[in-house]
Amino acid sequence: MRRTTTSPVARRLVAAAVALAGCLAVAGPAGSAGAAPAEPVPTVFFGDSYTANFGIAPFQEGERTFCFQAKEDYPAVATRRLADKNVTLDVQADVSCGGALTQHFWQEQELLGGMKVPPQQDALKQDTRLTVGSLGGNTLGFSRILKQCSAELRGHVLLPGEPVDGDVPASQCAEFFDTGDGKQWLDGQFEQVTGDLEELLDRIGYFAPDAKRVLVGYPRLVPEDTTKCLTPAPGQTQLPFADTAKDALPVLDRIQQRLNDVMKKAVADADGGADFVDLYASTGSSTACDGADRGIGGLLEDSQIGDAQKLPWYAHPNDKGRDIQAEQVADKIEEVLNR
Figure: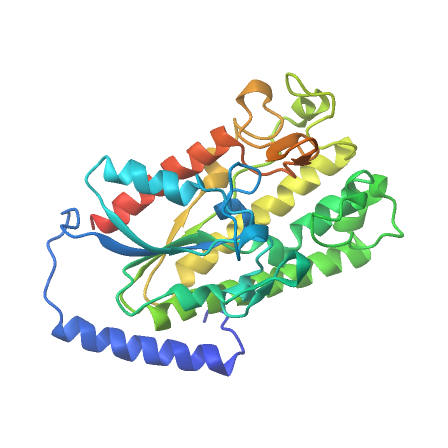
C-alpha cells in the first residue's frame, strides 16, 4: 500500500474527486483517441521560480511583482509552441511565483514587502482541463542547501532561507549532508516533500476533476563530470557554483536526483493518473557548468533583472534553459492531450 497523507482534508478531497469523476465518466461522451483537441483547452499553470523563470526580464509587475514571473516564462513559450501545432491552450491563469512552497498551492504566500498572493489552487475551475507546473524544490529547502555549501551565498538575503546549520563551515557541507544531523534534516525534508506533493495532486483532482495533471521536474544543475564546474563560463569570473567545494558538487547532484525520483514516484502513485516531465534526465549537457551551452545561470552570475546592479541567477534557467523547459513541456502536453 502506498504512503498516504495523514491530512483528513486530503482524504475527503480524494473521496469526493473519485466519486465525481465516476459520475462524469458515466454521463460524459466518449472522446476519440489520438485526436488533438478541437476546442481550446482550459489550462492553469502553477509553480515556483522555475516555472515563473526568475531571472528572465521583463517580468510581470503589480500585485505579483515579487513573484518575479517572467512575461516570457516557459508556460508562455510552450503555449505558443503548441499553437504552432494547432493545439490551443486557453490559459485561465499562470499563478507561478518565485519562492513558492508546495503548501502555497493551498495557502496564501507572503512576498517581499509584506505583499501576499492567494493560494494557487484558487485559479482552478470546474472546467479546467489541464494543469502544469513545478513545486517541491523550495519545500525541500534547496536554497538552504546551497547556502550550507557556499559561504559567499550566505550573505544573499534575496535567496530565501538560512543555511541548515550556520555553525558548520560551508567547506564541510558534503560530510554534513551525508552524516549525522544534516542527513537527518534532509531525510525529514524529503518526507515533507513526499506528503505535500501527494496533497497537491489530490487537490487538483478535487478542484478540477477533469483536468490532466502534469508535474514538471527541475532541470539538472550539476553535470556528471564535476570538473567542468572548476572553470568559469565564457565572459564570467566566478565559478558556476561560486565557492562551493568540489567534493560537495556530487552531493548536490545526488540530492537533486533524489528530489527528481520523489516527484516521479508521486506522479506514478497519484490516484486517477498524472504525468511527469523528467527535465533532470534530459538536461545533462546544459547544466550550469556547460560553458557556452549552459541552460542554467551560475549561482552569482548576473541575471537579466536589475539596472545598475543585476540580481544573480541563483542557478535558475537562462533563456536557453527556458526554451528547453518549454520544448519538453509542450511535447508532454501534446502527448497527454492526444491520448
